[in-house]
Amino acid sequence: MNKQTLATLIDRYLDGTATDAEKRLLDAYYNSMQQQPAPVPDAEEDEAMRVQMLAKVFENAGIAPLKTTPVRRLWVRRAAAAAAVILLSGAAWWMLQPEKPQLATRVKQLPAPQPARDVATLTLANGQVVVLGDSAGTLPPSQGGALLAAGGDALTYNDEGAASGEPVYNTLKTPAGGKFRLTLSDGTKVWLNAASSIRYPARFTENERKVTVSGEAYFEVKASEAQPFVVSVNDKAAIRVLGTAFNISAYTTDPRIVATLVSGKVQFSAGGNPVILRPSQQAVAGNDGNVTIHDADLEAATAWKDGYFRFRGTDIKTIMRQLERWYDIETEYQGDIQHLFVADIPRDAQLEDILKLLEMTNRVHFMVNGKRVTVKP
Image (cartoon, rainbow, N blue to C red; front, side, top):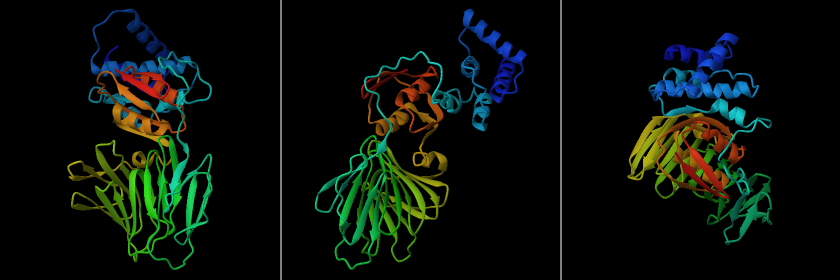
């Protein structure tokens, strides 16, 4: 079977349009590849075979073929040029079903690390720390002229409008394995990702509404021409807005700061280099302070807020950094893995299922011991 025929049959299989005869032909080809020694296939045939193997898993599990997406179709047809990319979106859907056949796995677990939950700590102006979320502590009724209210996964400040002098600052922080939402006194909404923090005045009393962020946060800023909204990022960058929605990713463990504009208009500056962002643009600042602007994948940039991991040609170390923060785990590496991955995975998935999913590519292997994950080629 030549490569073009194989790719076409696989495409038809994943589309759900393959005939019974075509399915039998794929089975026969798979069996012959398994039974007969053969030279190492080139990149295109190797990747095509991996897709066919995945299709066979679906068939043996009695699961109807998934509808192909443009990403999958493009990947199959350009396998030679993109051999480093493995498409996992369909596999993610299958792996995360409540009932599925058991796969042989090399993942070992003690207690299983759990997905991030709604938990945070609030540090008040007097230094008092209040735990929010699962085991909420006692929250004071007000701070700096703003009423406080907490419930479930959110903390809200309501501006009473009373006169106030110097601003009173609070800090909301999520641990690794935590997430939380915040509504500031002006009505601005903030989603705080795992292992992140935001410092802000309980009530905005100055000419600027200034907050400080570390980690990752998504903002929906309440418009106010009289009080521009300014986000200081790790003392390395700043975003100035009037009213807009944007995402900022600035973990100290990441080599860059990334600001993604969803709507409105912002000025992003790092190292004294201000740039103007328009919707669907992304500013990236390296450690040297240089800023570049790219077209943004908005779904990928904000997927965490909507409850997904969205990987698009993502290397394993970037993936593991996200998993470390979300599941509160530690990672060590043995060997070099150059592979890139593409996947959409719900954030409430168990870590074990995500690691099994990545292992299905046959490019990476995991050993889990409590909170420690070892990654090997």
